[in-house]
Image (cartoon, rainbow, N blue to C red; front, side, top):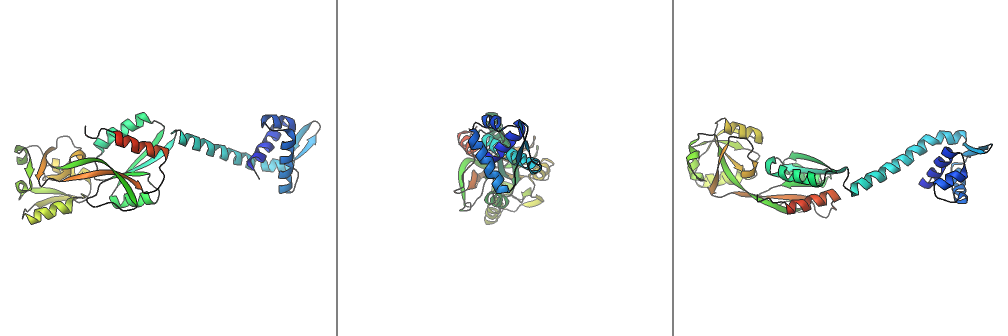
Length: 292
């Protein structure tokens, strides 16, 4: 059964005439008649009979009509979805963001992207790097914004977005506020709030061990909101990426000895064709003024 046969059948049923159905379908009447006869041959039973001057559906034809209408409607819906997808109308885009990357800087870009392409239906979800990699490979995400102290998986292609230095954050009134910049030696013996999800945590802790700098972990958590809240409450300082600090009132100073910075990338699966929305997303990421 072909789609044009379904169209011809429904047109005949609507107009009660082979000639009028042929005009509506922009086809010759002999071609339409031949298509219906072929369909009846495939089904093994007549679909129409004449009742005076009008052509009407047989009982089998009436029984088939709802299913044929649904089939044609589904095809038209599929064509509409594909058309809207190409024109970025109701085009879905799923972007993962690593949970240690703060939303403030990225939100400026997302706002600009939405204004430029309002038809893209953007979904953003956060997760740890291993989960984002799995979701990319499974096709559950189109793109992911990530950072890692080690090279990303060979199956991913990545482009650099920006460099993000680490800072030391603390509550107002903390003695560290008297310093313009901070070295690890300045933190010896200070209570600190331990960001368990930090991708550079092991590297910073290793340097502290090498320099015999002892830190007292007053609080530990994998959640960034809890980390910032505990720092603001006065439990201690924390090492944080500069653009990930969100809470108003937190003080910060650059970490200069040793300086620590991470590289933020946009990544997807190597060799996989990007959708029009994903391609524009990456193009706009490249053009965005991240240094501002």
